[in-house]
Amino acid sequence: MWSRTGFAMLRCSFPSRLIVITPHTGPRLFPFQAPQGDLAILHGTANPRLAAEIAAELGTPLTPTETLTFSDGNVFTRILENVRGKDCYIVQGVHHPVNDNFVELLFWIDALKRASAQNVTAVIPYFSYAKGDKKDEPRVSIRARVCADAIEAAGADRCLMMDLHSPQIQGFFRVPVDHLYGRYVICNAVRKHGIDDVVVCAPDVGFAKGAAAYAKILNAPVVIGNKHRKDHSESAEIFEVIGEVDGKNALIVDDFTISGGTLISMANALKQRGAKSIYAAVSHAALAPGTVEKIQDSLISRLFVTDTIEPITCDPKSKIEIVSVANLFASAIRSIHDRTSVSMLFPEGPGKPF
Image (cartoon, rainbow, N blue to C red; front, side, top):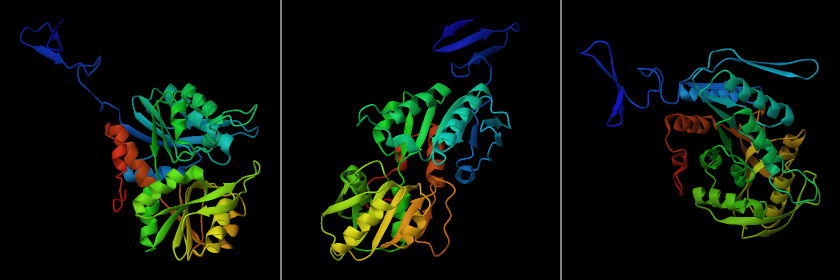
């Protein structure tokens, strides 16, 4: 065996036959899979519907899985099909019950690694512990960092998430994190309603940059609310609105809502300042019991949410409109699998929806 111009050549016992092996084929004489391995989509108990829609968008059957919860609370996960050498994507959000879903995600990652998957990507539509991104009080945990360490320790090669509460959490991971934005599909839904003369409203300074991104897509101005939260309760008060809303249709935007208190308080403040119709949009609808009823009784005409959290169902009379992000996740997974740019999924500028 010798090397010549970057190729390895193997002289066989037959003098007239020379086998040329490229450096990318590994120990086998001929490649038997794509470089990334065959694509496999799996799901846990958190997002079965979204995972099925993602697989349908990709034209790939779901890899069958099984999850059992024993009487003592132990969770058992099992992959029901061979995934050896495959490029695997496990869809499992971290929403209520948060700790159960998170631990189940770790078990799925571990199961895939032990089953000799070539790559394991944790697809986390909603990562609720993203709220624990800093130590802003004495003697508290930076929960997002602990979760990042656990995901890496379980064996994840990559993470795919959408609308993290704090984008800097990507830096908590040593593995690549692809961060998706739901604002493009939400803005498409807003456009379908033909809402004119729109002003985009951030409920606080913390989401001002996110509101500016919405405003850029919709070619609209931005106003900002001054929100105050007294404690760790899920309620807040809007004291002031910075910007002009009189005679305009307002769209309140945020990354998530639990009690709906911030959205409702902001809607009241906007109405007092002369706004006509008031709409709201959030990426993650982590709705607590009673929130749907509160939204129904509020000044909000319609609340746009994505389907990152399951289960969420709304009757036809509800003000809540669910927008699917299956195509967004499917496109990102295809880009990762094909080794193309994920950022190309997000064209910037008005009039260029996803």
